[in-house]
Length: 396
Image (cartoon, rainbow, N blue to C red; front, top):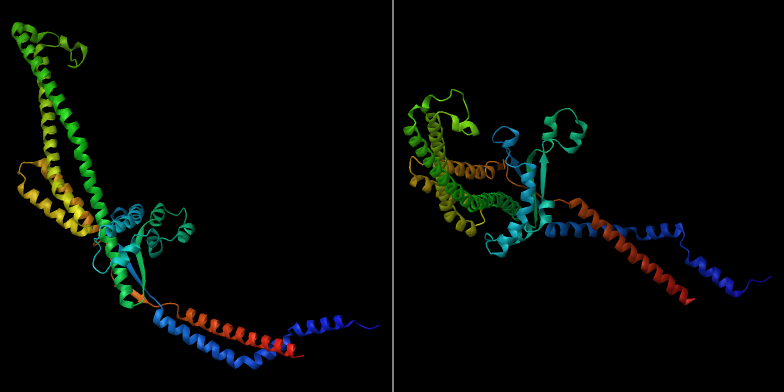
């Protein structure tokens, strides 16, 4: 029985197309020098690209100092940090939109305007890690607080030069401090502005009501004094102690009623004086805001703004009357608040060491170059071998 020619040709074609393990070994044995040279060239090119195009990474650690030696004395807690992390990108975008970016920092400010930058480039270090907190669960309530206590903030930045990376991470840290101070000062000023708008009308209403009440109380006292003149013997009527505000107070001795109404008059007058002093204090707050609000619109550097506001507070204090205790109270409170913000974003967030810079990824880049050179040469040689086989097959 004879095998058709078509089946013979198909069998020979199948055998020729199959690549055996021996063929692969022979191929590698013949081409290993070329593959090694290609790999070396890939390593050289990879390292060359790493040296010329690779970026430096800079890290800057800001310590979250505890100035009061208690858990409430840290510059930032987890809530205040989350608020800053949410609002700082918006502030950076506002700085860019209003063309108030510091010189030569336009690119970094555009990066700071992105929410993702703060997620990727700022990491918080806690007194106890999440893993430690799980291991020590139930040991102490203090450990629960420590697991949410921020001890440092680590900022990172990448640049093609070592100096550029260090400058960029310093600029980011400075914006964190100055921007954070600005946001807290803006919140403080907005609170005082809201206070003046809502409080003045309420104070005026209370002053008017108290003045009306004092008028009625004075008329009541005059009536009681006239009644006392008409019935001088009324001083001995009744010996029972009754609250003058009760319905039975009219049966008290007239002299007792006179004393009670005069006490009410004195209390109302005291309340009136308090309200008027509070109104004068609101006037002092308005004077402060009239000078502070324009400065808020001129700069986004919170630390500079803080110093300017402290200067305004000192000027108002110098003009304040010595016996104005309410004005003194407001200025003392304002001074303490501004000083707390200043300390929080200077001494509170401080760096003991300068930024550290490094150029990472050399081994990874070299390995990538080696693999790229090796496989590129492998496929080139394999393609040549296949092409040669096709040509030989065509020659038959």
